[in-house]
Image 1 (cartoon, one colour):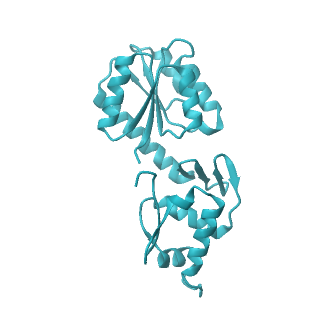
Image 2 (cartoon, one colour):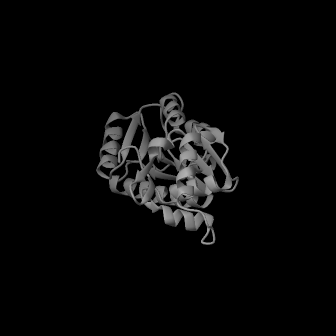
Image 3 (tube, rainbow, N blue to C red):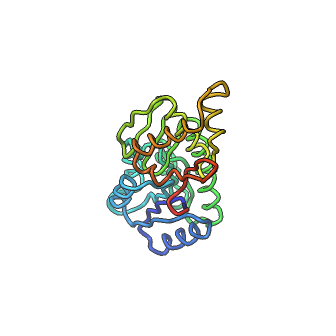
Length: 228
């Protein structure tokens, strides 16, 4: 599944240019022309990054940046600002408000794509250390907490560990033997049926996992994206 990038700019030609290059790089751009639309989309659907123009009518990019950082569901969303000319004040204020990076107009599409990829890499490293995100599911390792659609899900220690392994190895087949030995330990005398039971419980407790956890016949399970 392609990563969704929210592009917020009131200049149609620039928006089309950025969207075109994002598509070439395998991303799925979502283009809007104002801050109000951007805030609605960011709060309703998962996006991986926001490319945000500073100078816009109505709510400008700095105001939008502040609001994104102020909401729990978008507080950690990577934000890349587009600044007009070389306005140092815009850059400083933007970074102080929580923007992660900036590009000055006019910019090279190649440079913009490089910064987008670098920012996503940094975000992935940060997320893997603190938790995981998958569709509308979040796992916070520090708090030992799982949320689906912003609602806490009560999991046993083994269910939590099983889900963590699936999230950590998204798209890879994990065999029943691997899961049994890794989570329950080599000294555990149960059978791989134990894994099946816990997978069933995860699917029951988090309904969207019913389709997202794919059973691989004779092998085990893997967590899949929507378009796989």
